[in-house]
Image 1 (spheres, rainbow, N blue to C red):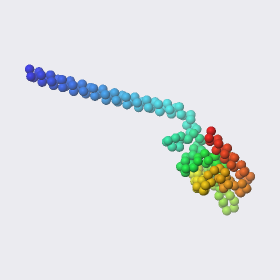
Image 2: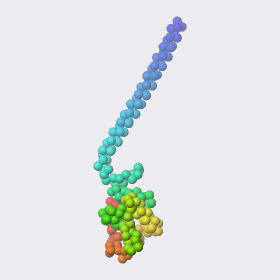
Image 3: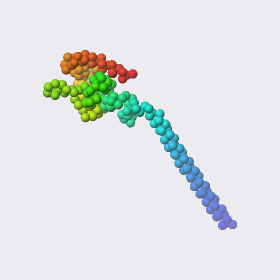
Image 4: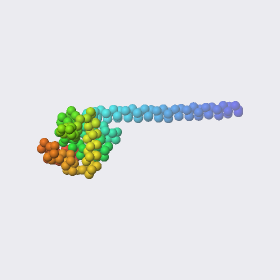
Length: 190
């Protein structure tokens, strides 16, 4: 009789062991199934979001992983560098748009000069040229920061006195500079 009891005890242990394995297997499988379902759901959501945003991507340029810029590509680059230099991006964009006729001027299209920046070539004032749009933007933002904002010229009116002085290297349009820059600035608030 003792042998039967031992067999019964071993039998119950064996059955318990097998049930434990099956029970664990079910939980592992359920976790794997749930994980696969979550992955599949996330992939579907991501695909759906990408499809939803596809038409908008043409108008947006990703600036950082934290936010997207909803402005045009040039304005987004100006915003990126203005933010890096710690200056008001709307001010920088407004000056750039005014100086380049809303990014249509020869200086912008051919010279990558986004700020109408000039230099003395020995005989006359000439437009600066940059080898890329990004280099032109960096030069413009750096100039605005170092030669205007850091010197206390931090409003459109104060900047105008030095940036586009009336009657100096002027074809008569500098008198409209303040209003022109304000027009572009105010459009960025909408």
